[in-house]
Length: 301
Ligand SMILES: Cc1cc2nc3c(=O)[nH]c(=O)nc-3n(C[C@H](O)[C@H](O)[C@H](O)COP(=O)(O)OP(=O)(O)OC[C@H]3O[C@@H](n4cnc5c(N)ncnc54)[C@H](O)[C@@H]3O)c2cc1C
Image 1 (cartoon, rainbow, N blue to C red):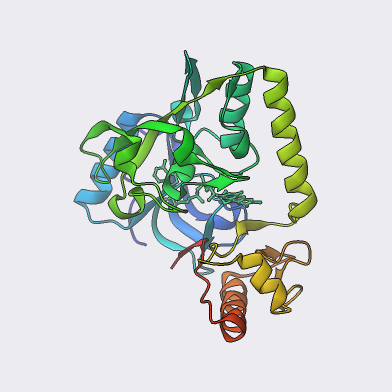
Image 2: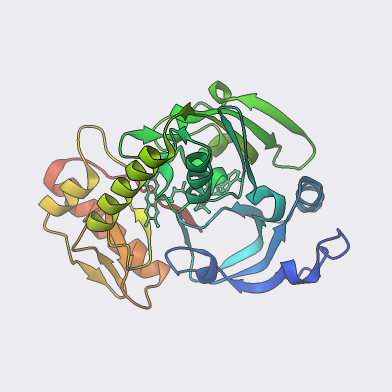
């Protein structure tokens, strides 16, 4: 992309403007070619200025959270990747409500809730995403989902021109879905209504869930978590296992032996490897069961 650096003029510090930045460095899959520009903004004013500029100049751009549900192409991203940092990473508790910035990690939000004796976010403590990414995906685990605890969000329009607050009902949360996937609005902050409880009991529940996660999931390999969504009337991992696909490999991408729902990067996997493997898995499961699996991982062309 032949674009001079406009971000310094917009007030962004030089050390937060990266050119030709490999997305493999910013994704849990450790896959992805360079983004033409990778910019970290630390407050609402900077985010607004950057989004206005990119919109007015019709420059391709997208927001990343913690990069734990993304597959970037090997050719990279011919545009601007924007990441939230600074004040967006904060979390604060008032009464029974935890207010967490869009870039606050779920592990941090859950830990802050626990410290203040607030239960309800235990399910999220082991999900390696940010609050913004978790609202976008309505992330969930072990019977809990973001929609159960999120009551309000502070959003910015995709063009950076307006900021407003909305109730959770406006976000239309559904299984791994939210209105944000259609609107492209950006989560600046989310409020979670939690329940008072003994911090030791909350801590014990988080530890139990994280032990279950570690025993079942191939966390020692880079991945993007569950590759496919749970289909109606079944479980993706069980279907993939029944189709005999555990251990199936394309290049450096492999269907995990430990958890068939995960495609893992066993070393040097490319996005092309992952996509080819996903196609094989999807076709074989379809032939076996008549169920067409839908990707949960967001594929960035
Ligand atoms: C080992 C592992 C285990 C996992 N386990 C689970 C699990 O148990 N349950 C589960 O649901 N998921 C799980 N995931 C997937 C992933 O962690 C979640 O989907 C998470 O919500 C993604 O958050 P993120 O910040 O990494 O978002 P990213 O992957 O960076 O982005 C995902 C999408 O969210 C958008 N987005 C990011 N931030 C914002 C924002 N502030 N405002 C608006 N949009 C935004 C991005 O534009 C992108 O489209 C797992 C992943 C891994 C690697």
